[in-house]
Length: 234
Image 1: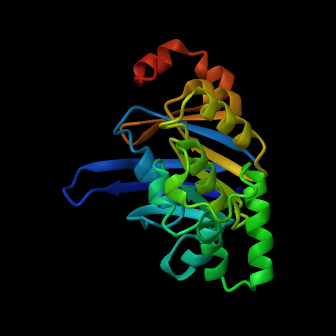
Image 2: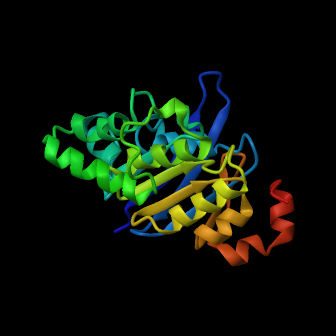
């Protein structure tokens, strides 16, 4: 069973402008998928549906076969973790440890389990020993890693990252790519960075005008210069 399914998803803004026009896709457990498209293509709107920040107007989103609805949002958000483009939108507590512990504590886990998960998540993102650091004192790359830890600590089935390389210098970008390649869960990575898509993902989706324009193996899609030009990606 796919871990994440989108079927005939449509969404219109309150102004009546269509953002998504019948998008369908599925992501298998452990799969790494890049989501490409020009600005205004609907990528962020799609992403916000995947863990119920936006609820479906038409169509369905299913996580492990269960339709995303108000009744199951807590479980959906545990299984589908969202990493925002700006880490300052994700880090809001006094210390890194408190930020990473926020989700597990809200799940009602005991403190020993919370501490275990926090330590393991920080180790996984290369930030051991950062527990008592203040998030606003971190570099941009460190903030990105801490943001990923706040999601990884929930042990998600899918991690959805919106422009994860934004604002990173070459060293930070390289480190992020290595981190993403080592994560144990399925990934959906929305990015303009075609080289990152090639290094991290095995499959590419192109979204343009609220519709899927392509879905295929990363090497095939990124080798199609005409396709990339048509959708503002080259």
